[in-house]
Each structure stands twice: as C-alpha cells, then as structure tokens.
Image (cartoon, rainbow, N blue to C red; front, side, top):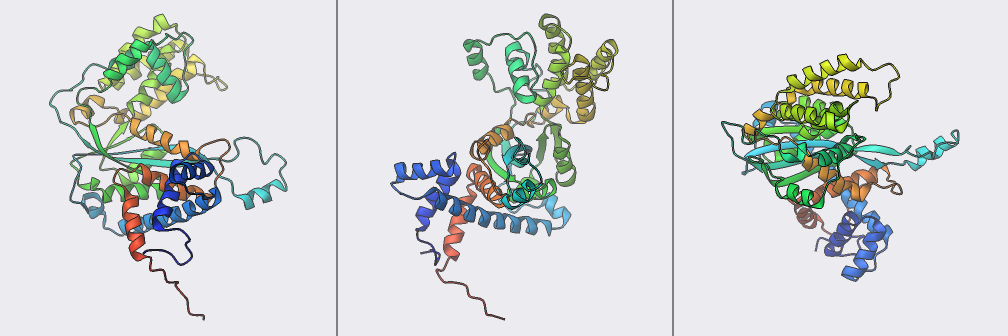
Length: 415
C-alpha cells in the first residue's frame, strides 16, 4: 500500500495535508481548510511536521539530481537533452524574495549579550527563485514592434510602475482612469511577444553558487540545453549575472526592460516639472526600446554637466543622485539592452514572470509574523516551487515514494 511503518494516515490523506500546508497562508489556515473542505480534523502541528518531512525528502531528491548534472562533461551540460521535447525558446529568469529565518539556539546565545537582539528587521533573509519558461515565438527580419507600447508612455502608468519596481516617484502624478486601465489591459500583449507554454520553478535559501547549480540542472532536465534560442533575463543585480556567466553563458543575456525604463524615468523627471520632463522621457524611452542606449547615456551625461555630480553625502532623492544612478546603471548594463535585436529573435525582454512567481511564493512564506528555521524554510520553498511548476514534479515524487515504501523498518546491525 506504500504506507510507512510509523504512519497513521494513508498516502491520500498525506497528500492532502501537504497541499494544505503549502497552499494555505499558514499551517493553522491549512488545518481549518482540511476541516471545512475534507472533514479531517488534523492539527496544525501535524501538518507542519508532515510538510517539513516531505519537503526535506524533495530537497534530498533535488540535491541528487544536481550532483548527477555536475558529473556530466561540460559539452553535454551545454548540448545534452534528456527529454524528447525541446522548447522552441528556452528562457531562464531569476530574482530574490524575502523570508524571516530564526535559529532559536543561535538567537538564545546572542540575546545573552545583546539586549537589542529582537530588533525589527534582524531576521529578514533573501530567498532565491528561478523560473524556467518554455516558450514559442516567431523570428522576424524586421522589428515586429518598433514603437514603444503605450503603457510605457502613459504618465500615470509609468509613475505607478516606477514606484512599485524601484520606489521612484514624482511630485506631480497624473490620475489614471478606469477606462485607461481597461484599454491598457486589452492591448498589453505586444506584436511578436513570446508565449509561455510551460513554467517550472526553482526556489531555495542556499547560497548563490548552489542556487546556480540547481537552476542549471533543472534547465538541463527540461531540455533547455538543446533549444536553438535561449535567453537569460534578470534585473541589474550582480548576483544574476554571476549565475549567467558561470552556468548560462551560452544563453543570450537580457536586462529586464522595465527596470531599465524605471531608471530612465527617474532621471528624466529629476529636477524638472512633469510638463517639462515628460517629452524628454518619451524620447529617451523610445531610444531604449529601440536599443539606442548610447543616445540616452549621452543625454544623461549632458544633463549631469548641467546639474553637476552628486556630493559625498548627497541624498538619494536628489536630482544629481538620480541622474548619476541612471548613468551608472545604463553604463554597466548596455551590452544587455539590445531590445530591438531581441524582439527580432523572438526573445522575451521583461522578467515579469519571475516577479509574479516571487509574489506567489511570498504569499506563503513572507510575513512579519512568520519565522522559519533554516531546514523548515528550505523544505517549504521546495514544495512551493513544486506546486507552481506546471510539469507537476510532485506527481512523479508521490508515485515513486509509494512504490518504494514497503512498510518494513530498516534495521542496522550494531557494530
């Protein structure tokens, strides 16, 4: 039957417990969901223990898959294909989330000598999340969308986007009507935009090198190495491009367009009124969209000559600081901003999929009242990634687990 010797629930009930533990906003909510929807009275502690145990089993499987990939010769890692289906366009995206980690033993030792050990923000740590997107798109001789979409040249929408993405804001903001929002949502898909067929997710609390190996191993397993068109999309964080250089250098590197345009928006607005700045921003935004980054850099350099460089203790919100930040950002990332070329190749130019995936994972793990142990966090992140993966890795896991669970105890001979 595939039941463990110490188990007091069937495999079917265990699956429901794990589903409730991962999909609900908390283990307590999972307990209530099981009681209401499945008429099962199972405590939140039991759900938590089962979720951690199954999650750790999945982590063990993941580590074995990563080690098997590491043993492959480099040519096979970059050209091999263990699956029959090869994506037309393979896209890898990565970013970081937030989670609170509290090691009780270490915290107790710290608090003996530190009266401020429970101060706010002390426990926040970064989680790492990656999306593996199998896409379809067409290649074109000409840019399928040479004009920047209206969403990026709408004052109200850009003010909101820049505030959400980078915390940038402007003093004068236009109100966005419901009619405008409706029109934007209807026309949000641009010509030539790749279509996502399958999404798979990787999530961990491990360091960036371990995460890069996990991401590369998962990409290889899904046939990404054999795809003819491959893209690696991320924002300007150096950790993203460290992973790209080490594990995905044979993929086309692409800076997320929305992050780039937010820096341009902030720099255009810096020290100007909305009426004065808006036409300047629209021109710069079109240049960025067309891959003419050098034009924007030259315009920013002229603007910096007018304002002057930022001082040593310059406030972050000062116009000089915003212009300097945009110059630094575009100068570092310009080789990954050939957006017209990427559109002709049918490649994605935004990291919107990883942004939405992180929000879905954060719904379960992030909260001012949610604290995780290191092992518990890793187990839950793994299961959350499994549930969001559209190839359903948990289905294979449950089948394998039930087939190899005999109901007998494993005894060791005493030495």
